[in-house]
Image 1 (cartoon, rainbow, N blue to C red):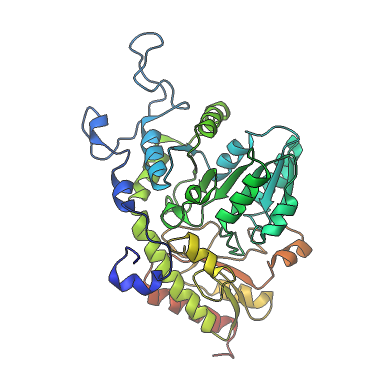
Image 2 (tube, one colour; image 1 turned 90 degrees about the horizontal axis):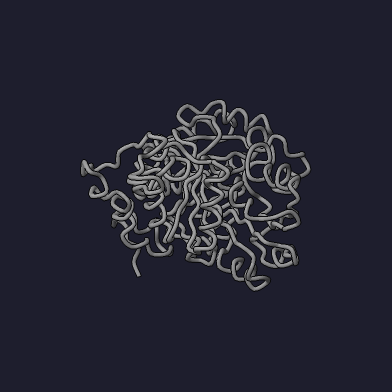
Length: 411
């Protein structure tokens, strides 16, 4: 079955899952119906009101207080649920707010098995699990879920949550969601499998259709796509999980502002276009880097050289714009490369329209002990790129001139 993309993109998407039916149409229309507003506004208005009039005590028109529910947030949640192939979605104040909300379903003594290579010991998921969740009585262990036997060994009688990030950050490991979900659920029907889908977006991967119980995002990245919103999203099909998470969303209070919901909702309208361009540009950049003698190794799931390339094609409709690579040499070569980039911006985060570059060992994973970084593969010569939407030739040109600056005697 052919991939539903423009003809000039066919080679890029060859072998991947077929694009999700009516994705663009649903992104543009679901939850945006003009009939829900008395003004018949085509674009959902920003409802900044914190409180809503009740027709009589206890009788309201769907909203009472904006922490509990907001019309603008409601539009976003409906749209994301449709894109994830889910019944329900909840918007949170950040990706970590989503993580905290999910783990609050557990109680002291419950166990969590987390993918070993997850976002940032210095400021992300890893730090929360190791330094916060463990202090709340949750037993956290880590396993390389690209190797199902390691996950199976890590599962214990008290395991209640399996946390998968795929592809991982920054090492771009790809986890077979179906295999791991089945394995976890066979161990115990009470285990909830969570997939952090931040790198993929709803356009390229639907974890719920692959057996996961929860799909979550840092919507700060690709889902919003413009580097101007901090937000988290959680999608589920199970009503029991939705009821628990909806209660916690309100009880913990980690909700996004109506304006941020408006911006993210707007970002969804071009998600399909952006992700295809990210993939196209990243593939070109990855092929260039892989052929360059100044580069030791490129890690990009869209390349046949990636160890889980087949898994990526089996469960995804494309690849995001994330590339990790090792530059030949030492720390000084990586630093020189980064310092000489002209279009790529040295900055953390990812998934915006602009191209970004970062040095994990110095930036996002700086607080990880060197021996632990070495085990994960995060060396001094590792560089992570978030390839943006600029012209392909300009992206390649910037990478080439920065490599030339780092290795002036090599062509």
